[in-house]
Image 1: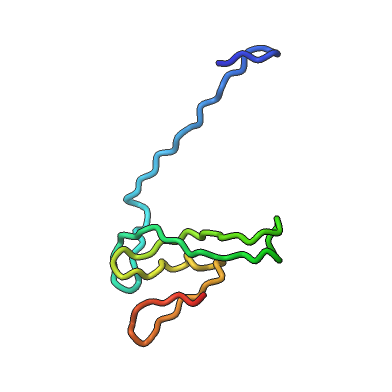
Image 2 (image 1 turned 120 degrees about the horizontal axis):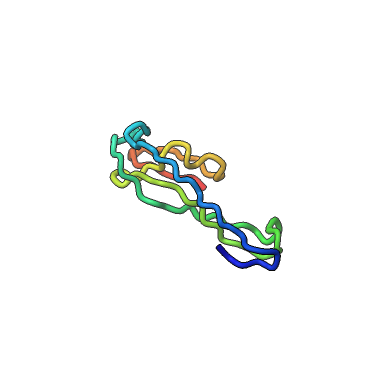
Length: 96
């Protein structure tokens, strides 16, 4: 409890929900079937002409990429302005 000019205020506890992760889907890499991902960033440079404050900005966009082959997980590039393409060597490539 804390004191307030109008009297005591009781803080409500947030109820914690128990979730059984055995029922959750494990996401796997479509290329190599690995299930371990690492945090990666795509860096976007925002021109001063379109920036809200009139200054050039460097914006990090967080994605998850496969810890084995490096492929960015499906759906992670949506809305980022980056499309993933494969080249002749078979290694994933990001065209910015």
